[in-house]
Amino acid sequence: MAFEDTLRSVREFNLNDLDFDNVGAWPIAIKVLVWTGLVIAVLIAGYFYHIEDMRLELASAEAKEVTLRKDFETKAFQAANLDAYRKQMEEMEDSFGALVSQLPSDTEVPGLLEDITNKGLLNGLDIASIDLQKESAKEFYVELPIAINASGSYHDLGAFISGMAGLPRIVTLHDFQITADKDDPNKLDMKIIAKTYRYKDGDA
Image (cartoon, rainbow, N blue to C red; front, side, top):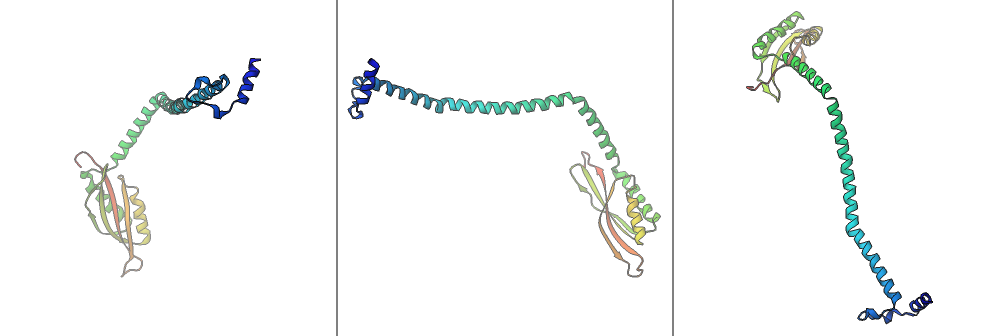
């Protein structure tokens, strides 16, 4: 019976009759509704101002956990293969040493010039000049250009270029200039820059 009286009082209640200066005189049903609404509003506000921030922090922590897990897996793999990496490093150092040994030192440049001259003469070329140019220091090595002027037939020039690859020291060829000889149409004049290299030590 009391519940029916409460429902009837709610239906018969007029919002205009609410007196905010005398909340205690409000019907119990209205008080319950108002307090329920306030509690729900507080819970919603608490979610958005506190729980939502915690949820975002949790998502960030979960993402960080994934990154840390991947880093751990990578480092664990590297640690498991440490011996293989060391062996590979030793092989690379050996290969590097072999390459460095192919770079001429200052005292070997005259011998290199002699090798180039002999290679040209062996292939039937007329060597007009072989001139050392100014060295150019790079990050790990020093580059020494050598200007070569020679003349010969097309096949002689080709054989000379191919023969340069067989030299015991590293030599690269650049800036080809080939022109026909004015006096002999079967003869070609060639200007070329051969570059050799030496390892850049602390004093270079």
